[in-house]
Length: 190
Figure 1 (cartoon, rainbow, N blue to C red):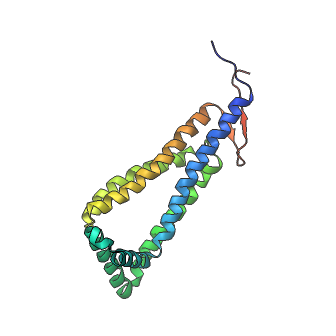
Figure 2: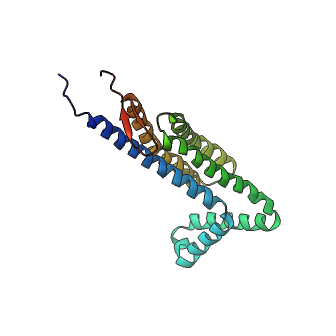
Figure 3: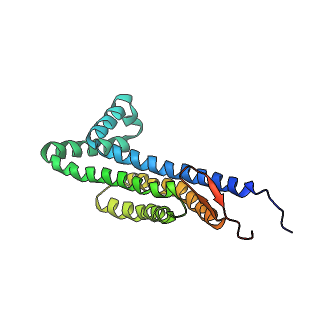
């Protein structure tokens, strides 16, 4: 026996799902923008990190971290002084993060129609793991740093998975959302 629900219930449920989807996508977009913007001033950030570790005594508590940050900061200082054009590569890395963030505007506006972007985002999150492990080992990065890089993919996969599950439910319920978050419902049986 099927329980009758008020006509407004499916629309309200669709609006709630659309809101949660959008919140999840905004989290991913903000993460990408922050990652992108902070990839521009790497030299300054590493110098600041080195200073914080040394001036607060944290370098004694975390000597391996302090050594790695010092090494990377020195590498950026040397290459930045002698070969400043190498930073152009990280500028493109920063731009790529910002461009990827823009791609998520599609599902932010219409999650069902642009579900492929959410799926693509999850595939990219999975791709971070082999990239970090393989390229990290080849480039001599410590395993801890590789795990930090992997964590970005894992963390981003959580809101993207939630968004994908809710988008599929939204799609199955035939609720179509518009930019303003309003929902209209098509009832297949009447």
